[in-house]
Structure formats: structure tokens, C-alpha cells
Length: 146
Image 1: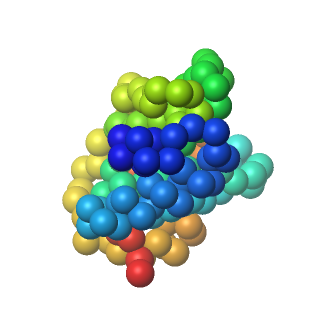
Image 2 (image 1 turned 90 degrees about the vertical axis):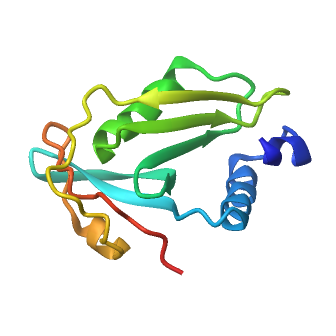
């Protein structure tokens, strides 16, 4: 990946996140950075989570800057896929001397019955209530707002 090749390893995650956002912009990709959603348990707000990037409204990209990816990082990324009801994601580690990445598949993905690709209002997504046990798939089609 271009970012790792240019600046190497050893920086904090936010540096790679900013650099990757620059590359996404150069490549004219639709993306949302640090997309936050509330997490509900039995309809009680128990916190929020942020995914590093949502690309094209359907691909989660989670970044790490650690010496080695661990099972906890994989579990976190898979958790995000489930909570966001996304089918695929990437877990990318910039912290090692060689770029590490894993392609992730959400085995619990629930395909949407209607195409929501025209949705462009990020605030609409933020208002949706998510539940750990019942995840709506109405997030689809997010677009980057400029």
C-alpha cells in the first residue's frame, strides 16, 4: 500500500488514518472517516463505536498501528462488521515493518431487501438505533459529505 511504502511504520494510528484519507481523496473514492454509531443493549444506549473508514457505503476499513495483529484486533473488526451489518471489511496494520492486512467477511450479514444507494445524509445514519442482538440493515448507501 502506498501509505506504508511512503511513511513506513512507527507512527500513531491517526497519522495513517489521515494519510489514507488523502489517498482515498486522490483516488476519488466515496468514504466517511470515523463514522460513529450508538450501541444499544435492550434499547438502552450503552456507548458508541467508531469505524475508521466506511468506503463506498459498504466496505469497512479498520486501521491499527501495532507491532503485530492479535486476535483482539480481529474480534473488534468483526464486531464492527456485525454492528454495522456490513458484508466485507479490511483490517490493516501499519505498525509492523511489512504491511499486514486481513480481508474480513461477516457471516451474520443480512442483505437489504431494498436498494438505499441514493441515501446521502450521514446524519440520518447517526440517528439510527442499533442493537447488539437485532441489527437493522438500513444504513446502506452512505456517501461522503463534503
